[in-house]
Image 1 (cartoon, rainbow, N blue to C red):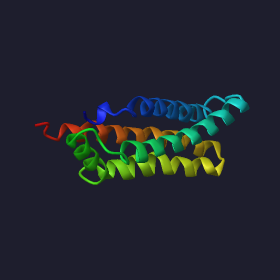
Image 2: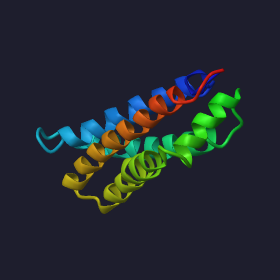
Image 3: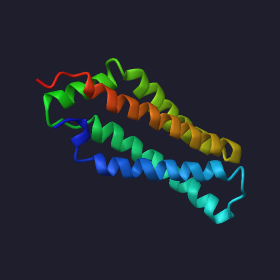
Image 4: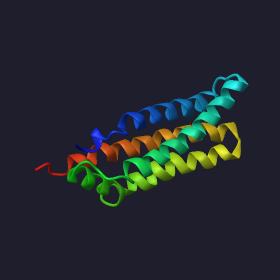
Amino acid sequence: RDLWQSTLLPVHLLLQALMVGSGFALFLDIFMALPTDLSAAARVAFAALLILDLLVTLLGEFGMSHASDVAAQAAHEISHGRYHAYFWSGSIALGHVAPLLLLWTGFPMLAALAGLCAMAGLYFYEYAFVMAPQEIANS
């Protein structure tokens, strides 16, 4: 089994989809005013999903043992090896911490920027998640 066969993968993908969807709603809110209740719900959902995704990423995907040596090597390459900058700076800092800080300010324009940061962070995460296992020999 490799990283793509983690038992947490379906949950992680669902969290990521909901996180980006709620972040995109905050981005749309600056171009077309959403109803106040919808905007507030998107803000709360986005913050909660950022935290949940961060926990699943750090504790679930990289904090638990892996089903194979190849998966463990790939996870190490993501968190400490060749892809560590994509993971720590891109996914964690830009994609999770920065959006939470931007949301905390309460300004709609910064909430929209938070949504964009989360999307960029997801790109960096997925890039590392897809590329790292492909560079590990399977045999």
